Length: 210
Figure 1 (cartoon, helix red, strand yellow):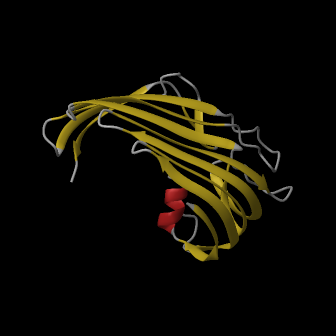
Figure 2 (cartoon, one colour):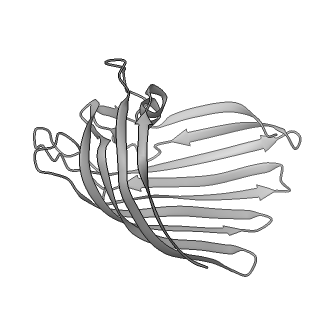
Figure 3 (cartoon, helix red, strand yellow):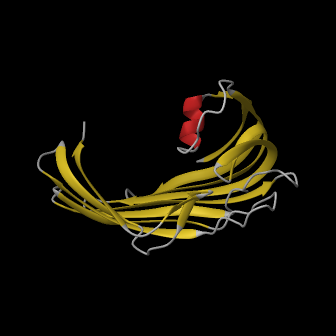
């Protein structure tokens, strides 16, 4: 299937949307931010091969106005343009599921803007294997190239690779216990400028699938 589109419009960035954009965001004043997608034109193709493999490739060009980009422990509204390409793919069978998405982004940001440019390349890849749909185990890999400080006051945010391992045991179809280990490569991961995750970590929990 070949598709194309053109979108645009204004949106009000509420406290919730800004907190979702960066969970370290702290409300400075009560005035919401009005940002604008002047236009976003894109074209792509998606399809499947047999009953297991699905893929989608798309690309486009977008122009934004007064839209937030991150800086050192804050963000700055800025006008900028972006050319981008996205690849999504998945392979599923009764025992094995593999899916991933990858993005290339070339951002055109005015000189002197106090922002970090989005990463040129980013993506993730996940693989999960299950035994009789009771025991699940897998690996998750995510990464990003460096992000440039357009203003030039601080150093660039370095790129990173984050390797996860996870497992789950389901008592029944709805309930289960899971364990997850992150940053197994021990890298200094700076998802948000000024906040660094160091060293491996572990998380455990209970799952309910409705």
